[in-house]
Image (cartoon, rainbow, N blue to C red; front, side, top):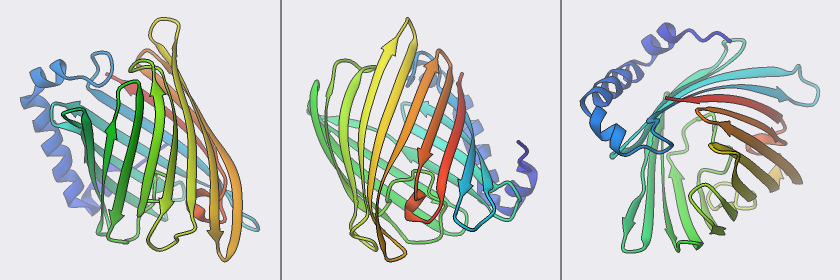
Amino acid sequence: MYINFRALLTQHTWAYFLVSVMSLFCTLTQKSFSESLDHEGTPYKLSTGIYNITEPKMTPRAGEDVNLRASSFFGNTWLGIYQTQDKTFSQTRMGWDSSYNLGGIRVQPSLQSAAGGFLGGSVGIETGEHLFTGVGLGRTNLKNYFNLNFDPNDAWSMSAGYRWSAQKSISLQIVHDNREHPDQQHVHLVYRTPFLKSDRFLIDLLYKSGSVESQFIRKYGLVTGVDWGPLGLRLAYDPKVNFSNADMKRFIVSYRY
């Protein structure tokens, strides 16, 4: 996989600025990073993904993505670059999220921007330790954006589940568009569990329903993942991805350090 970082960062000067800020921030807060890690002493996560896209009566195409995330007392910040394999489309993005515990209620805000003027944000509220419930709301400025969240962005969400530990949980989540396409909805059943000493397994069953070009669809998708220490692997099948006519297969490898 090849991505021309120099050309992309030249095209989007704000992304170059973000790289510099993140580098400086990571240097100045090295001690803080080591004291508030999100996963077993590793404040950074580098991910690279390959996306295979198929659509009726069209030649299969592919996309590539690289994302760097840094975790600290400030929360999680990230910088990513997505482009199609034929180089006809590319988009840089940056974002932040965090979680604040306010007397038994966890508030989880996030912000994201992308080249082309896209701005988006969300806030979630969760309560409960072992048995937990949550609600959330997301909004964007409706600018063009290649949605790598794969759930509706302008939507409300509800979730409930049971958490045995930080590494083992089961949850049900509904994400329902409440802006431009109010009949589009995702339902996730997510199970996470550790195995062996430091490894983890993830399975995410997806049920989606809603209109795609005036046709109402009901489809099932799947994400499976394994973490072996610092290494991670995700495989996914997402039919009618982002409520388009395209089906997507995703292969993502990550490394924490």
